Length: 344
Image 1 (cartoon, rainbow, N blue to C red):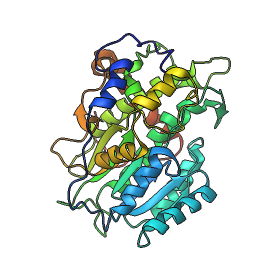
Image 2 (image 1 turned 30 degrees about the vertical axis):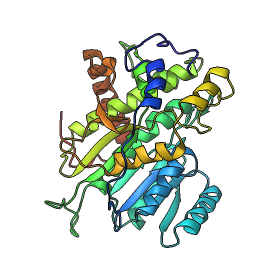
Image 3 (image 1 turned 45 degrees about the horizontal axis):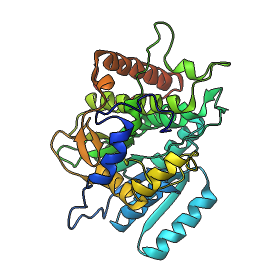
Image 4 (image 1 turned 180 degrees about the vertical axis):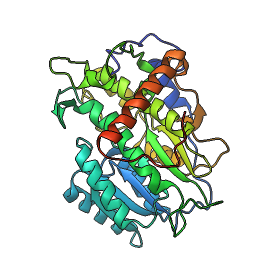
């Protein structure tokens, strides 16, 4: 991930070397004293390992009713028992969710809609990186499918659940807004995606015989997710639903398969954040207060601009194209967009 990085000698704050140094030197926010999520229902995807596991545990400690979206229900039951051993009063549910399959996303949303009376916070943490090329769900590259396509699709499906409602189903005036947290990465800044002049953007990642270098595809997926989050936020009333994009930074987990390389091992030893710190940044993104927070990107727990490419005219063009493709995907699957989404 680091040694083959095309931005290796970019010494701006977005470059990989300053990124590693910043992790060591930057303090991260601590939870507000007295913070309680009692009475709140919180969804965490990818909650059985890594930073997602730690974030889920911290949220359960804060009193949230925890819903875990997981691929492996057996592993989820073990995690649930671990949490209950530490927090006996916790309320924890696990629903199956395989982010490699949009059909699985549909089934998950249907069950969540039927069984969760409210949903206050959704932390869409599930993601992966691997150097193995695999095709899923009708020929899609699994890196793009999990890290962007399914995550953005799930986000759109969750909008109606996250907006506060009255018993009659209409938006509640003056109620606390819902919070949708999208987990991107500093790596979004390492992509300067070349927008195709013809055809859909995402179709590149479904074409037989077309292979994108895995790390480049991961960077692009995280860029796409950050842009999608910004567009989604712009189309929602922040008094009803806030959309926040965040990153936990480089954490000491098994997320990256090249951890045995010497440069990566050095980063683990010198600069990697602990899982507890990564989880704390997730919880901060899910709970922090602030005016005009919706649509913002949190790095090290603080509002920061997206990459220069994301802020450029080309980045804005890419953002609009991605939004169009995701709404077209929803229409093709019979998913009606929430009435609270504004037109551009």
